Image (cartoon, rainbow, N blue to C red; front, side, top):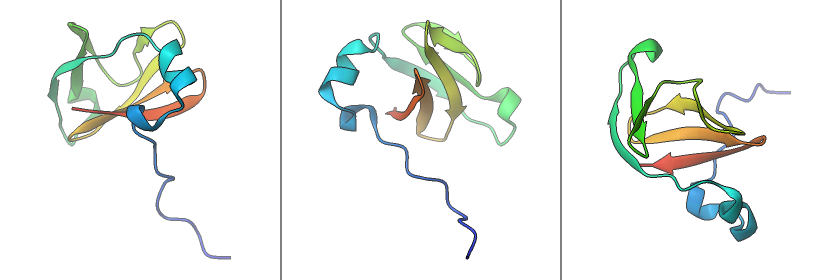
Amino acid sequence: MPAVSAEAPVPALRELPEALRHELPPLSASGAMYSDTAANRLLIINGQLYHEGDPVAPGLVLEQIKLRSAVLSWRGQRFRLDY
């Protein structure tokens, strides 16, 4: 069986079921800095500065900062926040 080299696509926030979107706290990304070095990446959400692995709200974690989007996890559901 061939190895899967690409990770599964992460749905965009707008693609999540409406009921799930209503459970999420408001999310507004207003700035970001991407770096090849994960420790140097940052994202401003709702006026607060976050790094990868930081909790944004109870049950909501910033998993990864990419060049034009971020991957967050809400109670086990991963989704993409484009900016």
